[in-house]
Length: 135
Image (tube, rainbow, N blue to C red; front, side):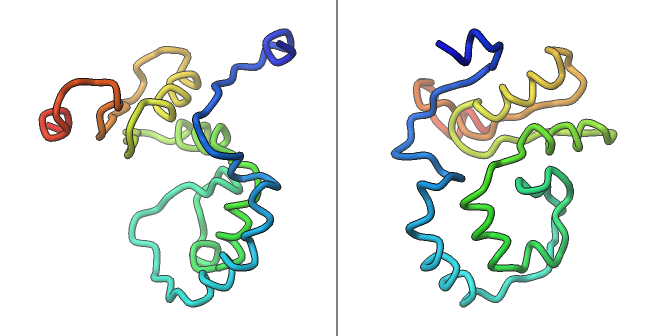
């Protein structure tokens, strides 16, 4: 198709609809109201903002509006990975089934083993038990 002709790498995801897109608009008000009921705590472990591709600030992390925008807008995953790779002593940990995000990180390293990338949950098609896989 057109994406291939233009040189884009992509992967079709098995989801019900496009998250982080206009398809989320119908729930944004309800989501925002629920978020405003939450007492957000200080950040204990720093993490990258998918909206900026940089370290999230305390103000962002505690803002209901930030999380509403997070649900609706483009994920800057590539920028976040680049930001992390510009640092030193990185270890990437994928929490959840499969290796999709780990594969995206490997694309940024051009296949070089410049940092450990660990999957904590087996792919659904792998036939080993979860406990054994994690260990």
